[in-house]
Length: 427
Image (cartoon, rainbow, N blue to C red; front, side, top):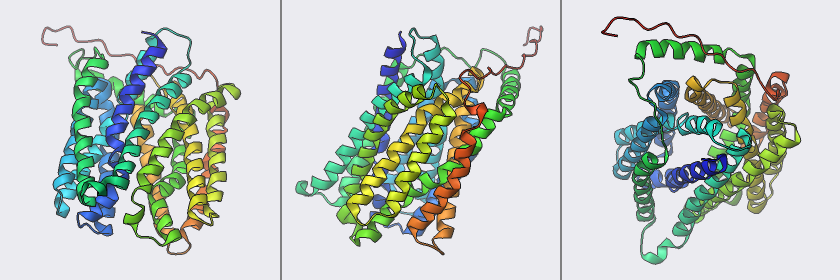
């Protein structure tokens, strides 16, 4: 299989996964409100979900490295299906907490699985593409498919009232379609994702010891440490905008949230489409900067701050939405460069674990962004809090200019030597 064929196949698979997930993500908060939950309960549920992700993120990556990425990805699909089913019947707070707990497990087991598989297969495939170009092609296709689900969700909510359906019934139908998508992904994953890794290939204790040693030696690299720290610093402003922009729309226009319910999936659809464009532009940006990936990320984050200023000064809804889409476009520019840099700095045996560590730092940055925004709102307005978080992200941008993050061919990580296996028959 050529690298181009692999990118196309993985892009379709990743896009279908996004399609099932993005059908319901834009309508989750309105759905929970329609089910009778209050804002404080929803906020607590989101904290519980994030806590589950943080606790299980890295262990799930280690399990993927040893037992197989496809196995753990299929587990994530099962958790996603359970989440949907529980949310459909959730009318009490306990059921909601169980549902978001399953959602957290879904997110933790999803990160660091098939991306790690893709990197290994990409290096084995025929062709001259760089990994950055491979990620750009893959995510460009995936974001296009994911955007289509948000478009369908927006159109259904905008015109579903002609079908004599209530808003709650339309939300429930979207959940059912998403669940069907996750079910269909299970056989497709077994058919498309070929993996020979078996948990019986070596003794688990010896494998775990070797895995921990390689992970520690990888994380101790100054370059990877700087990258993870930079992510924690630059993510809070993006996470805050992602969570709180609907509230700003409500404050800006003083309209009922149900009246603009279609806008939220519509913006997400546009964001996914722009992320597909950003993936292609990112490859060109990295080429222009001679594969200095840290600089490419820094430039994209600086452009993101320009969009942030435009958002904070927005006089009306159309201006704000245009600046918001520009912000997400610039944020999408960082993703392929970050993924390539992350994978260049780790060994195959811990690739999924490092993916999980990267995802964990992103989650921590997201929690930091939500917490700082909540604290700042007691003192300043929402746009001012975004500007302050943007100023904080400048520290992370400075780290991205470090020479260790801008080497075209960073040193490979050496795997610690495995202990010789015991010669007795029981071993």
